[in-house]
Structures are given as C-alpha cells and as structure tokens.
Length: 219
Image (tube, rainbow, N blue to C red; front, side):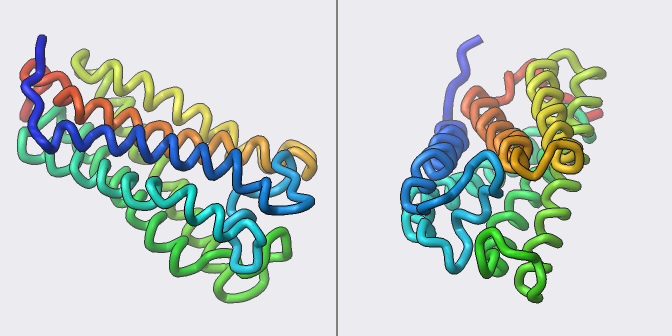
C-alpha cells in the first residue's frame, strides 16, 4: 500500500540521519584521542570535558543531537494523533521519546568531567544517574512494543526490531559485569547502538506512516 507522505512522515528520515551521525562520531572521534582504546573505554570518554576528541565528537554528532529527539518526538505526536497501534505500543513510543530527551538534555548538562577516570564528582555521579534512567526507560519501552507486536500483527515488524534492540541492550548491560575490563567498550557499544539504531527504526516507521491505515486501532 502506497503511503501518502506528509512533512511529518518525511521528517522520520531524521532518525536515520541521527544513526549515521552517531556512528560517524563513534568511528572517527577516536582519531583525535591519542591512546584511546575503543575495546576497553566507554564511548562517553570521547565527549568528556577534558577529552582531546571533544570538539570532533561534538561536530560529528551534531546531527544526532538534534535529529534523535526530533524523530522520536514527531513519532510520538503522529501515533497519538492517529491512534496508531494499541495503547501499549503508543506508551512504548512515548517512553522511548522521554528517554531520548533525558539522554540529550542530561548528558549535555552532566558530561563526564575527565575521560577514563574514576567516577567521583557530583557531575560524574549525575552522568551515571542519567545513564541508569536512559537504560531503564529504553528497556521498558522496548518490552511494551514487543508485547504490542505479539498482540497486533500490524506492529510485528517494529516488535521484531524492538526484540533485537532489547537483546543487544541485555548483552551490553550484562556483559559489562562479565567481560574483562579490556573489553568493556565492546559490550557497552551494544547498548548504545541498540538505542540509536531503534530510533532509526522508529524514523523509518514514521516515514512509512506506521503502516496506515491497517495499523490503526484504539485498543
């Protein structure tokens, strides 16, 4: 079925732009950080206040910073106004949007003060609090969309992607306590790419109108 796309649908592509921007920052920002070990160090080390890669990270991730929030916010507006999917599905989208806002505002307010150092200052503790909130909201939102997809075949594709993102996030969360410190950065990237990648999935869904009109339910 051909979707008659409006501006709000076209802006769903900002989710894909956000993913590409974030991946570019992850790949190229370490070039400005001598001695950075991507397998052992967190991605947030690249944007720490004292990190030599801070400026390059900010430039490469600028599109991600804006587009990630724009995409999920527009998706929330769209599913709300058009009553897309079930209530659980819409709630999952809303929570994922809140997660993106907390991530965007929280990390800007409380970046790591010093890359690769012990978490001690108030700013660094708040950075970790933001991280916990982001992870929990991501997990809850993904679970809701998985459940919605089981009950609504029209949402099956999104639910499958949510399931993949959920598994990646679990690998990242559990792996950080299992793998040796030398591989911390690898498992952490599973969680990060799960969240940003699923944002791109939501953007593509928005671009396609979430499968309207067959996906529209009021349950």
